[in-house]
Image (tube, rainbow, N blue to C red; front, side, top):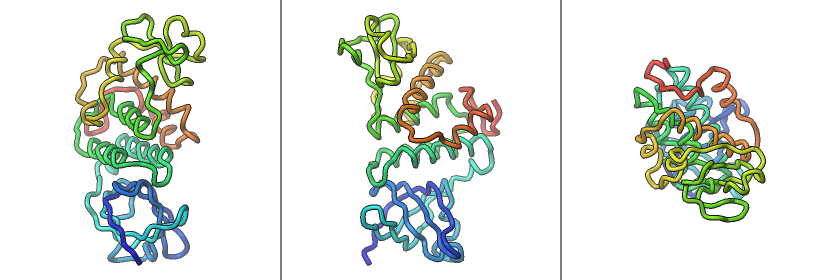
Length: 265
């Protein structure tokens, strides 16, 4: 049997029968892979402490055909992200980004950028004592970009008029996925107002990834506007509500405040 190897991050796993597990990974080289780990529930060698969410592994597997399950030969631990397990807020954030990736990425369609985004997101939750209020909206914006839903921020989505960013007011339509000029602002359904500062942040090149976004000083207003825009876009593209998102909202973890290492605000 041909064996492939790739770095991967465990998204979720569930029991299958008496001794097996079905595990979904986001891999660097193969996109999203779901496979069966035979004997994983009883294993004392191949699968010990490597099939839990938030775990980075070197995955050894045989790809399945089309939608068939892959066969998991084994996993070698690279890194286990432990901070989320010690702090409720970080656990909720980690659970959300993992579930979001799982829902937004279809099978093997994702590339290395998506894998790197998730790895950087978990690393930030693991290592940074204080989280930027841009952490979630930046993560969501980059994921939307990588899966083909980047917002259109250079021209009106109705009349195609080029927009410099100096027009007042700046209006964004989540249903159309982009800006509207002042003449077309009533033709985009529910809309959001954007400041020039927020538009400047959103137009930044995405090549720097998550780390570049988190280094940007942003006012509370810009953070609120960015969150509102990204949330509006996600609502158009998510196939179902996310349980982890609901918990974040109910627990008050989406207020945008900075978070220290102990989870306090």
